[in-house]
Image (cartoon, rainbow, N blue to C red; front, side, top):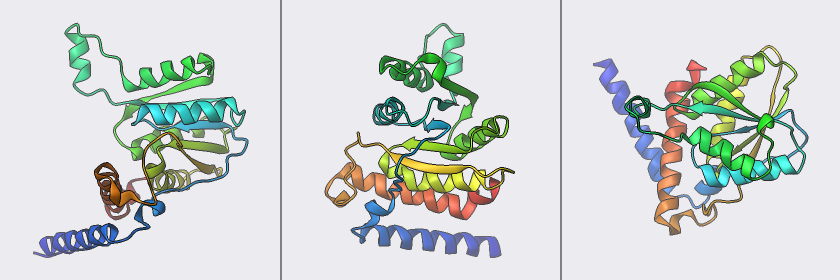
Length: 212
């Protein structure tokens, strides 16, 4: 009975938070975490939306802020079975690397971190494992879609807080997506993004935070 009441209470607070988000004009702006780029040991390019994130990562690389780009390998799921049956699949990870090379990022500057990425949290864990074995990395530039930067920054900083040596995380939102943070309620796509992102943030803070 107590478990049922706790779940009901959490659902109530979640719904209240969503309603508050819908009524708040600044909800879109609060999702964005933007730091001034500075020289770093690596760019961490998060998977998901390919085009806007690749363009931003290529810009940052070409500006000379870092010499390496880290990409955690995505979870392929049922695509693996398709490949076993002879159907060729180009993963998002491969597409991302190919696009970066097209924009003059040398292949040997792109490091694919082996793993099965299914979420931002799994990306943070895979990246943490890599950095723990490469202790020269103490500053990263976290490149992702603008609306994803706040949650990604929170997750990565929490993951890195468990490391022996501190790692600075600088958030670099992509300038190449249509998300309008100031007037997010005017487009259906932006409304969906805002509501979903706050739900994911609430889920992390309530249920997943202690797993890092």
